[in-house]
Image (cartoon, rainbow, N blue to C red):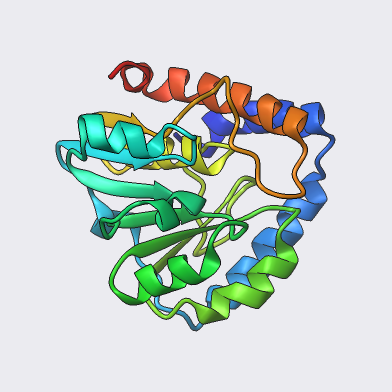
Amino acid sequence: MEFSEWEPIYLEIIESFGFSRDDDEKSAQTLADLCRDRKTISPERLRITGEATVCGCGYNLEDDLLKYGIRGKLIAADGSVSRIDTQPDIIVTDLDGCIQREIEANARGSVAVIHGHGDNIDLLKKYVPLFNGLILPTVQCRPLEGLFNFGGFTDGDRAVVLAKSLGAEKVHLRGFDFSNPYVKAGKDLEIKRKKLLWAKKIIEMVSPESLTL
């Protein structure tokens, strides 16, 4: 998804949630600064041919993996990294999940797609320097040089958009439950429900076949 396609959706999202575009842009600058001397990778080197499986953090993750398995490249959205036994090819994270597991997976070869937005500037400063493997920095506002914006809002739907942007012909979802949110401690359930509605809407736009097993 080009930024010109994503921007109207992005503006609707930040208005809906009361987010600040200025804060998103500050986060983008912070991430760009932090990545200046880090081992980043270009999207061209991450091209996906064929299929990809995206793991979300729904309560149904383990059951889905047992029933349907993994097909193609494995992309783990944030906290799902701590709930799967297989080394993911790619981790998509805004750094509010199981960070230590993500850092360890990155050191073992998983590419970390680290996302900056207005609410996680402090997390970026704290954790980005701890990722010693390859990273691909992303943002939800207009990307600065060295940053990328493939589209997407939550870790899960951004992982799907990323997979499609990298060339995946078919994306399989595991651990996605849009009606029964997996809520982290201290998070608002209704906000999570609202975010999942957007996640589903975005997946329907870019990869509608993913919503059927």
